Length: 491
Image 1 (cartoon, rainbow, N blue to C red):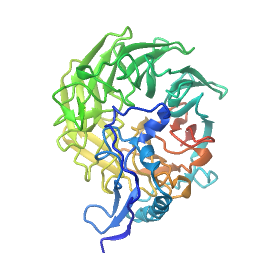
Image 2 (cartoon, rainbow, N blue to C red):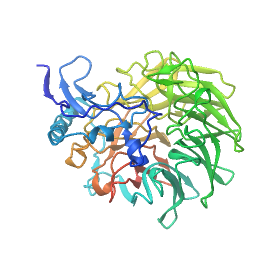
Image 3 (cartoon, rainbow, N blue to C red):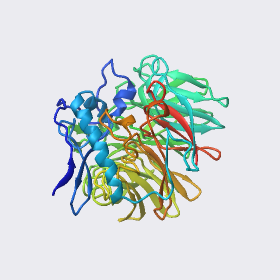
Image 4 (tube, rainbow, N blue to C red):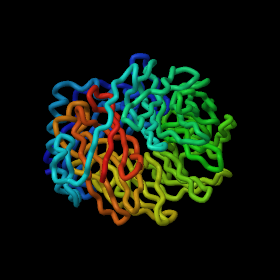
């Protein structure tokens, strides 16, 4: 018997999408929609007696793009908008089969609580801090920065022109928009966490700027915004995606997802991305241009500074075209540390790496022992990788896009989907609203919380932010108006 459940999309409208990093948004589509459209395949589920994996997550027929495209959140909304009632029922059945995958996975050592069941026996304390309302305020928050007890962040959509915003959550709990992007020269669709330097914040927008290839911007706590650099595309680089910035020696370093080496072509885009340096006065320099194979293509996660060298990940490229972990000096000397195979070690490391005790720890959004539910990994030496945990969909989650946050000797992270097959997140092409998890360097994984959707939040996509004795985070959707949330977690 090949399958116990076999659910596929049969009624999905076929659409062609531009590869990620270059998808153009219509005027009727806000940044949150565009971001969630860059999502992965749906959790169309097959249980197989197969020597690779008993639980397989497949890309459904008709889903836009060739294997998730360059930016994996570009497609989900556009795809799910064409899903029929019959398909929604199929997805619900998919949820039932997904739950049965739990018997193949590793049981969580701690009981996890649904947001609809916060009084469970779990010791995890969850608090919903804010629900975004959409335009003219923000929609679809991503990363947070804790600055003297204040939480600063960006929304990918909403704002006066639906091109995103910068906000602050004050000590009293009030959330205030301090800047609304106009979508032109000032930038559009900010993603990633802000970084503080010299009393102001710096960040990136994926679009907008003088050439519509993205920007590096500066914004003061009072809301004065200034573009310090507009990417030009071509050899210069384009579309910094979720990367955020890191400060090294007073300069800002980051990555672009496209542009760079004109001889490197990935799908129908020229350039496989860059590592760049920009001064606060706007002087920009391309540090390294990716070549695809074997070094990597399409970096998106934040860089990590270790003793003056920068470490990061690429979504694609590498030896097996499943992404890579790399090191690059500020002088532009690049070393590929590991190339992912897909099975069983993971594929598409989207969120960068976190350094601890001589190792580089991170997540892959896809791949692993359960075939495309994702992994947590450790690269301890060039060419040496260990999978600490393979996600199985239910009950522990699927698609960990965000990187890991270290507190003491424990890592914390999120999965965008999976966790619970509750009906709260069935019907939009997904099964399960995502999870928050912890994991030790030895690979002991615990699900701390399974999101329940509706007023409590769904689809966490950005990394968690460490505060004083708590973790802060955001969900891309959910909340009282389904425009995303800010939450607090006390592990």
